[in-house]
Image (cartoon, rainbow, N blue to C red; front, top):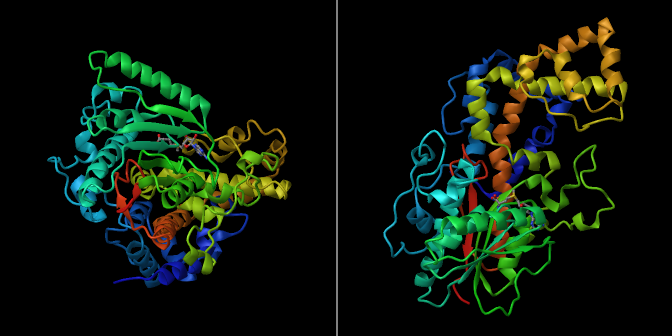
Length: 485
Ligand SMILES: C[S@@+](CC[C@H](N)C(=O)[O-])C[C@H]1O[C@@H](n2cnc3c(N)ncnc32)[C@H](O)[C@@H]1O
């Protein structure tokens, strides 16, 4: 079945009451009663062991559930991008309509297969690049680096040498793990590697890691470290001189919020940029992320963080349709649906913490109606504690809110009321589950806007599930290239 953009947007609008709800308001705003009555009774009767199957959209649900719920779940599955990872660069090439690589390519191992041993190191990476790099990052950089090197070759072939790039620029490079690997992998392809990051401390640390790599590679003179720049990129900034003779490929690996939009805009407007590989993240930070309810996330006085609204939507089509996504919905799009299902499977009781936080919000607002969504200490192993132990730790650094707890503990009616909330922890988890079920649809809508925006500007783009979503939940890479310079 083929669904149009209108279908996806209508489904999202229909479930806005769910995607826009904040979990901590579960009791304050009585979220449970927003569910259709047949959903309430059905979810009340399912066991915690049934929750994960609700979230595994590729599997059948072995439970009698209301048809409207099953239908919503199926529509989300059909309307969202496939998250099952590709198996190698040849598959990426086929999806992106580029010729197969000239050099023989190896299919990628699955994440489990690529782990060398219990250390979690990736067998496909040279030893010196595994040092100081987490297994998740190893998994990602290995694939992105291979795709970029392959893209430089494939593009040249597809355009009979008319278009190629000689430089890869990793934007939002963090500690520089990807660029370090690229500087080795891309060396034979003649790729120059540069990075940009706003955080000077990250750039310094990246340079220290470069120096360490240089010491480890003493025997190999065939290597030059990436050139690293510190720069805060704002919407509308030009990253590369348009008259630059070197052609570039821009890369953003988990470039947060507006940074991904800035990257795509640079690709579409700057002739010297001929390709882009962009994996987004932190969608809640789009448009500056200042629309979080009850909370001013950025300080109004900090001009450097003021952004315009060009992060989302980017395309004229979405603007015409006046598509908007709330902060809560965009935050939901960052959820790790597969990891959450695994956690539900292995330790459903640990999820009680969502109920504890919602009950604490109820207590706080009872005493201080204006104090909503306050930042509290996160409490480890909360499920091993009773609610009052949890609440004390959560409010540890908030003496201003502690009176809410002290008053409640000494009031038997209030203790009874809290106990009355806590018995409903499975409802809180069910509600969380329903919201999480919608996450892939929201991410798909955000990424569709990016693809449409590029197509409006004359470039075709493909979304490729590059990573194992269980390891790296933001696994969809937007890949685009130009075929004439
Ligand atoms: C989620 S981290 C990803 C780091 C790295 N690419 C990786 O995969 O490990 C995002 C990085 O983007 C940088 N960043 C965020 N917004 C930026 C901006 N507007 N200009 C430059 N760098 C930015 C941050 O400092 C951070 O290092």
